[in-house]
Image (cartoon, rainbow, N blue to C red; front, side, top):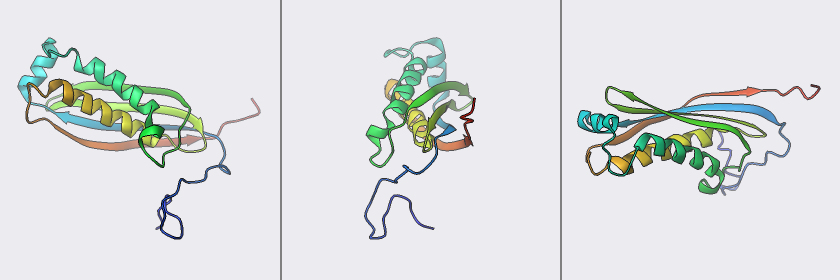
Length: 153
């Protein structure tokens, strides 16, 4: 198996997507922030001194998705048609989901993974004063799809 970002001489390179067709691409990623039960309770009651970590994480994740091409050296900057970040409680902390859509020549997986990662880091930053044992983990791409666009419509 060959790596797409390495040329025949072993040098890193940005993949040339100029010959690829424009396709509607969707991706979904997920991650978790594991928190103490006390921290979960403090978040639910709105007692985090910096403000609402969930609302802030959603905004941070969306902004991060939009900046992915600036953050990851060989990632193509993409037009993002839609991006969302959702955060919900589970018994051990918070689950973060991001979904994004682009109509482009390459996929939008890195954008949703970046959104989830930055949202998790934002929660960590906002809660670190009350929970010294937080763990960010289980960040993964859940699904990606491609849909050919009918240009005759």
